Structures are given as C-alpha cells and as structure tokens.
Image 1 (tube, helix red, strand yellow):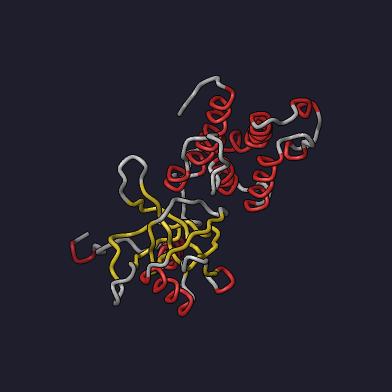
Image 2 (image 1 turned 90 degrees about the horizontal axis):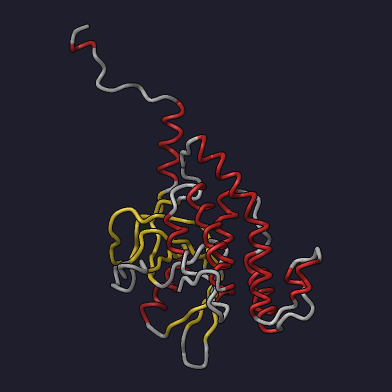
Length: 271
C-alpha cells in the first residue's frame, strides 16, 4: 500500500462521536467566585456589601447563570480548580442590617475549571471555562469496581455508628445503642447538638442510592456548613471534589467516617 492510499487518521466510530459531543456539551462559561469548598447538597449562606459582589449577583440574575464556587487548597492556599455550581434567584436574596447582600445557596453540579479565568468587562468578577463533571466517564478496573460496591455497603453502618458517637459526645443516652431507631431519635440527647444534626440531615436529605452521590453525601455529613461547633472530622471537602472516580470517593468517605470516630472516642487523635 503506497502513501497516497494511507488515510490521514482512523475514522471515528459512533461511540467516539458520541463521547466528543458529550465532552463539548459539558463545557460552560460561568462566573467564578472563590470562597469555600463545598460539595453538592450542602447549603451555605454568605454576603457582602462589596459593589463587585453585588455586580456579580446582578449579572447572574439578569442572565440566568449559575455561579461556580471554588475554595482554596488547604495545603498551598491556592485556588482549587474543582468546585460546584450555585443557582441564584431572588428568593435566595436578602439584605441584613449592615447593608450586606446575603444569599442562601445549595451546592449543585460539580465542575472542573479548564484553563485560566478572565475578568469580565467591568472588572468586577471572573469568568471561567468549566467542564461539568457529573457525568464524565470515569474508568475503573474490575477490582476497584468490586471494592467500590463493598465500600458502598459499609457506609450505612458507619454512619449509624458515627451519629451515635456524636450524640454521646454531647450528652446523648448510651442506652439508645440497643434499639433499632436512628440515633437522631434519641429522646434524651443534648437538645443543641440534636437540633443541629436534625437541621443538617434535613438539608442534605436521605442517604443516596448511587455510589457517587453516597460518597459525596458523607462529605456533606461529616464536614457540615456551618460546623457543628465540635471538632469531629478533618476537612475532606476539597479532597472529595478532587477524586477522579467512585472508588476514590467511597474510600475517602469510609476513611473519613472511621478516622472521625477514632478521633472522637480518643482511640486516635488526628487534630
């Protein structure tokens, strides 16, 4: 076969074309703000009197955009390239007595910043090319896929034990270890911590039934916003956002629950 008969490249299959189309559809240009690393499902309220912040919110309301929020790397102090989207509408907004514009938001879709951000026309905030990663293809070996299922099944009992320790730490009734109810139903648990946990569980909802969502749910549980007021777990939200597949997410979720319990019971102090 001579050179003229050799194709310049191999033809793309239908599967290749479908994957390329999916990659293009995942890219969105969104305004970016740096504040804190949160995971999908977590709620956060914050505000500012800064005119630039108000310009950002005004832009989002006018164009129907989402804000992409990223946090800082706890080791380097540099902005992360992973974050979550925040949907904004007028029902999320209020003004406080100090003149701050306050918004209440819930973490939405996960994304990864591609390339460098750029300033919008009024120099008030940044835009970035964000790849939405919720449905990104994440290959797993058969061994890691099987282990992911094992870790997934371990989480409910670990969460049950974790919740019980939280209540006992704050004066909960240890006799509730022997009943079949959730630790959240302990009638003699400390009112303050019980109320905080009830509010948190209402915010993040029931434990999800998919591998990805269950791991992320654990991060929202053990690293709540605002904090519970007691030291229960090392910061894992940035690490959870950075995980590349379900095995890494579930492994991190189980390790976080176990290390948190070890810390709270004094078995092994981590911080």
